[in-house]
Each structure stands twice: as structure tokens, then as C-alpha cells.
Amino acid sequence: MKNYLIGIDLGGTKIYTAAADKEQNILAKIKTPTVSGINNVMSNIFDSIERAAKKASISPGQISRIGIGVPGPVDYEKGIVRICPNIPGWRNVPVKKLLAEKFPGAEIFVENDARAAGLAEARLGAGKGFNHVFYTTVSTGIGGGIILHGKVYHGADGAAGEVGHMRFADGGSFENNASGPALRRIFGINPEELKEKLKQGDPDAQRALDHLVHYLGIGLGNVATLLNPRVIVIGGGLSNLGGLLFTPLRKKIKENAFSISGRNIKIKKAQLKNESGLLGALELCR
Image 1: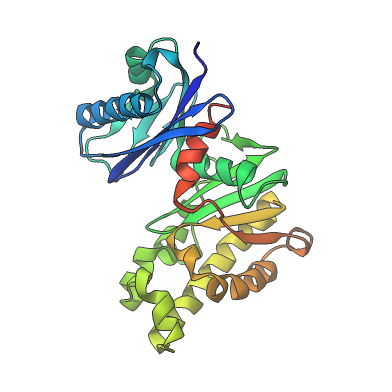
Image 2 (image 1 turned 45 degrees about the horizontal axis):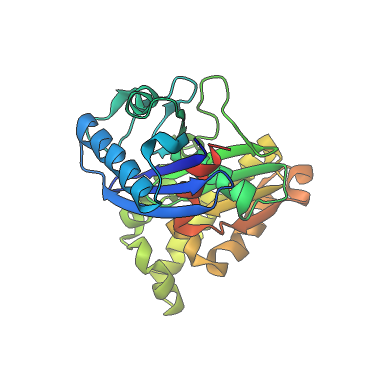
């Protein structure tokens, strides 16, 4: 019986794969290095699927659906990954076709990783119970996903939700102002150390946080005005600042949003942590 699912979270350094039953109960998880190049990465993806299936005591022939989230723009209908900036050699890769050839009979679903993570948060995590969800990840970059009534909204060309590429008045992008590398470039502070430095009263760390809140407040305030979501869910490494970030950010977003859009909006920390991409890949199979 073809009743089993595979979810794959493809990252720049690792491939995180799970096998699950038709009720989405995870039976096995596998981590595999990503390496580089189209053939090498696809070979490791195939291997990860087979290893996950074996660990779950199922055969590859019992797999009915495969969902994969990838770090880059995707033609989700054709299953073609346009480019993966953090995976060398990946451009216009027909992931759906390659997976279908390797695992004939299985339905294949290919999605951008931030949108897959957003889908998981909307259905299973911090956005559960809300029909209008905007998800953003604030980390090495800034990604986003619009989830309406439990489904990803893709837009005309599949690029809806790419909030990191919004521009500010000075010409800089959202991502270039409010990501982890931006804080390192502008303030010389390692994002992983920011929380501890804030607790120590470091003035540079406080300036970095104020900068982050300012730009996130403008960018997400504009998102609130444009989309009027009921909840904005924020994930990624910088969300681990917790209340140090979220308390001032909630106020700043409401200040920058149109009054009606900002009145009842909720700003929540993502709940699924490092599992969001993997769970989102499985949710693609639902």
C-alpha cells in the first residue's frame, strides 16, 4: 500500500528528511550533508529518502507523496528550482522531474523553504487557528510566506511573500538592513552573541537591537498595512532574542501599520523551531 510520506528540508549544509505515515506521524528522521552540485545534491537527497524509508521499515515503493522545501525561488507548478544561492551549481534544477524518475508513482511537491516553514507554523504552530497568517524568518536572510486559510499564496509568478527584497527609502533592502549579517556589518556584533551582550548592558548591542526593531517595525508594519494578516509569526535565529525583541517590536509594528490593520494584529514567535521546514515539507503532502 502506498500510504507513506516523505518530507525533505534542503538546507545549505544539510538535508533533513523524515518518513511519516498518512496521518503525518513521523516514523524516522535522517540528516545528510548537502555538498554541492546538482548531481551530488540530488544523489544525497535520494539516499536520504531511502535511508529514512529503511529506518521506518518501509520500502521506497510504498511512498505515495514527497514534499521538499528548498532555499530559493521555485516554479512550484513545474517543480523547478530557479536558483539556490547557498548551494553552488544549483540553477533551474527540475527537482520534481528528477524525484519522480527515481520514485515513480509518488506525487512530488516542491516549495520554497520559508513558505514551507510558514505553512507548518500556520497549521501546526504559532499561527494555528488563524486564517490570515504572514510568516517571516529573520536570520542569515529574511524570507517570508503568506498563508491564507491554511494554504500558501504564491502570487502570479510564485514569488509572493519575498519580504526580504522590499526596498526602503534609502534604496537598501529589508534583508540588507535587518538580517543577522546586517547587524554584523553595521555594528560588528555576532548575532549569536547579541542576547548575552544585551543582558550585560553592552551599548553597541543595544544600538544593534534598536536598529533591528526600527527596520523590522517599518518592514512588518508595511506588511500589516498591505496584507492585513491576523498574525505575523516570526522565526529564524534572531527570534531567539525573545522578549528583548518582541516587546518593543510589537509596539513599533503597530505604530507603522495603518490603524485598522494594526489594531488587532498579533505578533508571535514561531513555535516549531528547527523542525518547521521539515514539518512544512510533510504538510505539502497533505
